[in-house]
Structure formats: C-alpha cells, structure tokens
Length: 99
Image (cartoon, rainbow, N blue to C red; front, top):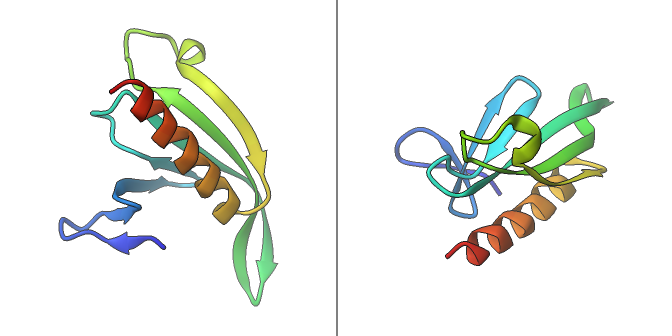
C-alpha cells in the first residue's frame, strides 16, 4: 500500500504518488513516463467517497510534445486498486524499455 516517504510525500512501490483534487500522478517527472489516474466516479462506502471508475493514462514526460502526443496508453478500471496496479505495470514496462 501507499506509505509515507521520509521527505513527506507518498510513495507506492518505490515511486512518488501525488494527488491534486481527483487526479493522482504516479511516477517521477525526471523519468521518461508517468501515469495519470483520474477519478471519474465515486460511491459512498460507510460514509466515505470511494473511487469506482478510474481512467488510467500512461504519458511521456517530454515537454516538447503537445499533450495528445504524450499519451501512450489509456484505459478505465473499476476502483483505485485495479487502476494503480495496471498503471504500475504499464509504467514499469515503459521505463524498462527506455533503459
């Protein structure tokens, strides 16, 4: 699961996880790719909002490309756990290909 890093940020499987509203960014901008997780729908579970539909987007971090050219792969998953798991797989493969 996500854990607190000593510098104060969240880390999941050794990569930074940053939340901005309903969007989470997974990975480092210093790498060639990151994953963007957009929470599209939520549902109540014991009084808490829980993500039920999450759009997963693998993106290049090259700022010379426009936003549409940066998108490598997209998909939609049911729940945040499924979304971050597939995002981690895509990101790991993309980073391994660029090594």
